[in-house]
Image (cartoon, rainbow, N blue to C red; front, side):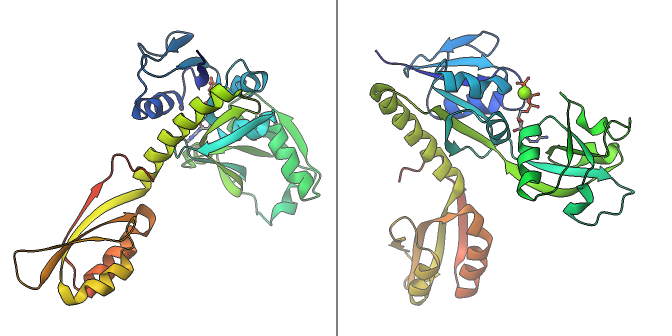
Length: 285
Ligand code: ATP
Ligand code: MG
């Protein structure tokens, strides 16, 4: 029988959330990531635990069918793999930073400057696209110390809060790309594996839908219902149930997480009361 092989980071920022995602998809593994690989008990999939840098190569070669890793590594490695789905964790920026005392005048500031990075391909492509010549100094890690020790005048690296930059006397001046964890696949999966992949993708999308939406319940006078319905589209349309109190109803619907606060403000101004909002665990669309 056919079985999928998914490459996951062995130990690092992505490991726990990657396994957590599969677990929330109902996939159970016998034990943790201290082994090289482990087979799921209730889904034809095997997890391979690898360094994230190596995942694009293994997926391209078909050693693994799928992989979970940061988009930044996918772009840097330039392997023949497909990005199937953004996963909503390990969000970070890939930014250019310079000494905090420098007067930054725009991208042309970097002309002929030496920039230290662990992501030389992304960096080179970016400046080639802007027709600005720069000198790229590739280093393996601790990029933020490069200006301080005179290795380079600027750096290009992952930034999340910016505290590492600050500690090293640097400031972020340009965001080159944003990255988050993604699911990648080999460009050539056979038909049986594709069927299994579709099953897995359906589960991942169901979780993503749930995370992006909230379930909302509220009470309203009947005359306010038409206007409330226009604010609350729901999955098809809101559910409306009469309250024991004459002339009032209860409405149930779904709102998008990112529209949530705007919707609540509107509902209150239209006359909604007793608004309850709860998380959705799974949402099949
Ligand atoms: P490995 O040993 O597997 O090569 P690593 O040291 O390269 O691990 P991690 O530091 O665990 O990698 O980061 C993995 C990914 O997590 C990065 O490629 C990036 O996509 C994302 N990431 C890195 N740093 C941050 C951060 N500060 N905030 C959010 N996401 C981050
Ligand atoms: Mg790595």
